[in-house]
Length: 120
RNA sequence: UGAGGUUGCCGGGCGGCCGCGCGCCGCAAGGCGUGAGGAAAGUCCGAGCUCCACAGGGCAGGGUGCCGGGUAACGCCCGGCGGGGGCGACCCCAGGGAAAGUGCAACAGAGAGAUACCGCGCGCCUUUGGCGCGUAAGGGUGGAAAGGCGAGGUAAAAGCUCACCCGCGGCUUGGCGACUUGUCCGCGAUGUAAACCCCACUCGGAGCAAGAAACGAAAGAGCGUUUGAGGCGGCCCGCCGAUGCUCUCAGGAUUUCGCUAGAACCCAUCGGCAACGAUGGGACCAGAUAGAUGACCGCCGAACACAGAACUCGGCUUACAGGCAACGCUCACAAC
RNA sequence: CGGGGUGUAGCGCAGUUUGGUAGCGUGCUUGAAUGGGGUUCAAGAGGCCGCGAGUUCGAAUCUCGCCACUCCGA
Image 1 (tube, chains in turn purple, brown, cyan):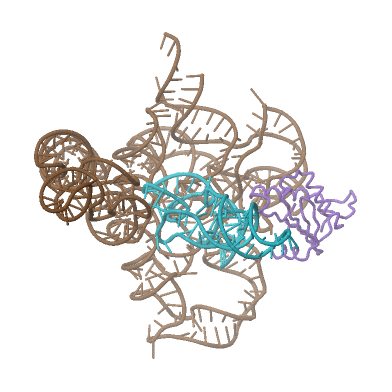
Image 2: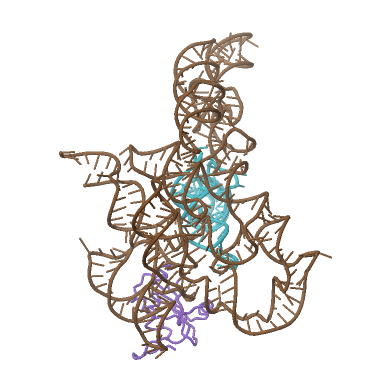
């Protein structure tokens, strides 16, 4: 996932946290706010584990999101990891995040010919 | 063969494929190179670096604490000394001063730095006992009872005297020194300084959010220039100090620098018991800023530990699956 | 990066300065009182004082090293 898609400022995180529509699964929670740009942030709390484990969870969530990125509606996303995310396998993490996006209807129909990097 | 001791090291490797940070090349698509640790951790010490006076004096406060050396420095390391533990190789110790002063030593016990309960002896009396004096050997209490043990001595006793031993001080042998050897010259002093304290040495403060620059453009207010604004973050002195300091306009988690090559590492030779030093040679590319290493798979006998750089070094401490090497190291058993 | 605070009975807290007996409230158990319950009264149980070393005759207390939680400043 390239840096231009990442949510950066603490103020932005706070904004999403306050205004965002939320939905959750066993492994993660999604907060979403409509916006002109497509930005994604990840929030992995101290309950998950030590720095190594937190980094790994963040990387796996990021990797799971990459194939979905071109099909996502524009807006600010924050994914919050919950404790089972540390032990879940990668396939389970992927299904979980797809389910979160579908639940708020944020995934475009995705015709198969859609090229990567089309997010503008 | 088994059980140990000490020291040092590794702590996955190779390949395919899709991605990420940084650097270089390219008009672009993209390509090439490179990319976490021994502890990156805890933040417990010491420095570099930056700013505050040029880092100066005193008081207060903190730190260290056997001796000698190493080091940029250290509370670290090395080698000794003393004490303690282990059959041993070896390991552990904040280990200055209690004859400078103050405090504390509960309970028990007569008495905790002085004392006399039982006892022992002598004297007197109203004689199964009481009082006075002497004594501290014995009993008892306690972690600790004013050197220990034996002999002499005595009314009973006592370093009161003597032999041996223990400790402290003086002198003395060896050593740079901690310390040690001897001596019998003097003495017999409780413990606690991780209680206050004394002595010696040492420490200025803050920290990369340090600090510097760029972007807008000039203006206003207050204080002040030897009757001193402001500055050095415990206080005082002392010093610096003038288109200077503070505030508003002022919108910024803006951008760039600081930002990684270093008292570092490896090899050889020489000096040193060693830590380490000197000389010569060699190899070096993490530098992010919501913060880069992940997904899928194959092979290597298993590779499943603890764990993620955030200015940089030297240490300490803590966590750690499994594995390797060295020492003509130690002990036990067996064989020769 | 820098600086504090807390950890003691199931729960909330004293005791740490100046070292020797661990205590208070509430909850729990038993008994009394009531037809029964609550209130009340009496008795009792419950603590490796966060962990590991050290100093001391003796440590919740002093010293050192860890662990967890929490607060503040830039």
